[in-house]
Image (tube, rainbow, N blue to C red; front, side, top):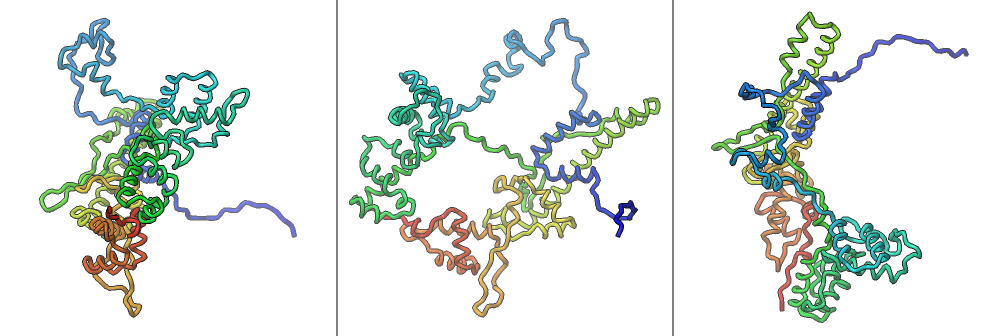
Length: 470
């Protein structure tokens, strides 16, 4: 058999997305803040794209005198010469300037510098500070703290300097575990100090599981005294470093706003603060001018096509987002009226079928988007929720009942039922199941209620029980 290689032509059909279509997909998927950044980047790179001008800039027609400041960059003298009421004062500008947050290391380092330490202790103190986590805990065993000292510090030296670090503010800094962190925050002059120490050292797990009778029995203290001590412990901070250098909350701007107007809801796409761009008229004129070099005209036409594609993609994003939001408001009107308990089961495929688009379009349209509603700002994906599984009938048939409930709606009902219970006689999961059936017409399995309760961070009936003092 002779092996050989040869080239052959074969017709084949392939589905490929055009660059314009890929751009529209990207623009649709971008949240409002990311879209703003993308537009600003395009404005820098594509000279055929320009901002919409509300009107011609006001000018006096007079050129500034030599040496006269144009107003863009004011020096110190300009601040002093400005007329009252013509703009912000220097102090107002300084007050409005964001101040960088103080990190935990900086806060502790300043305190360490005030202590009367010898050079060796100061090096050890800095090394221990560097080994602290953002929580304020010591990240490594004390013996493993990296430090460049000769001779190597002894265990006694390390413990001594660690105690100095643990004396800094806030209390609890430099702890090696939760128990030590809480103990560092207790003061010997506190009432029932010995009981507090006993609870922290021996009964943290019992406190977490609300085993008050066991604690009272083993410590010999009354229930009232145990409850008072537990309340004191609950006010201690297990993460003392959290107030320093924390990650700022993400800035959220809603893409859609829903307002109540009479008996209806009005939907608007929030785009006022997104740069409004158009294709430059002057570049269109240049592209049509045959006196310009053909290669330059070709380059200009390419820029114009890119700018036009972006403008159309932004407009299509706005239209698609409006259609999706309108469908969501129509289907989840009970949520806007009553909150999470009013959420109905809704799948993306249902909205896609109603709008005549692919389900991936719905997924991209709601990705990272937020809606301002009468119930606050919520992620648009929150309005999509699955149906809660109901129990089958006794004969094994399909479950019966009223309209199906959403998972989010049932979770909210479970939360409200627990919130309204008698703390001295908390409801069991079976009791919650019965309330859902009798008061809300929902025949739901106990294991489903248990799953939703745990997802909400709600403990069992034993953990939620409130004990009466003696």
